[in-house]
Image (cartoon, rainbow, N blue to C red):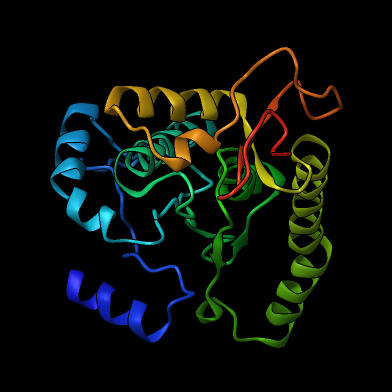
Length: 239
């Protein structure tokens, strides 16, 4: 597995390479939720630390059934993303992009905005670099079904993605001088805790913004904080 990562980095040195579905929660899923027992999950993913150290991208999966209670779904996604943030801080470094795999449909049912909040907005809030987002044409064969998909992408999915992208671009500009990524404060606090617990003291940690009173006040600053891109530092990624 490491040999494969080494080879693809030689072939495509600017790419971000990792394995689909990792890091992951380790437990037996039920009909109601993804089980993610902390002790078991931490132990197994730590045993896979060699894989995450050798990866230049992290690709957890956050698929869910919208028919399941949203509180359970949200908790499950938070557990997966929190575990990904822990693994990133311990093994990969905070500049390693997180790109969760997500979907926008369950059968021929398209996700509504509350579903998209879980599939797209939650990863964005935790500092994900993006989402690998897909659906299946296997469910759509008739002309009207294809038109329904086209309408959904045009009227719901496309505008949602665009508004989310615009929000985080503006947050980066105003909070981070476009030199960092906005991360919701509770997720960044978790990342800093993970770094502290793991004794990490590298460039990624030094480039992280700390929560302080000097941060420039704007409509984003109450909820979001900067994680500076590599080579930048300071409360607003200006140094």
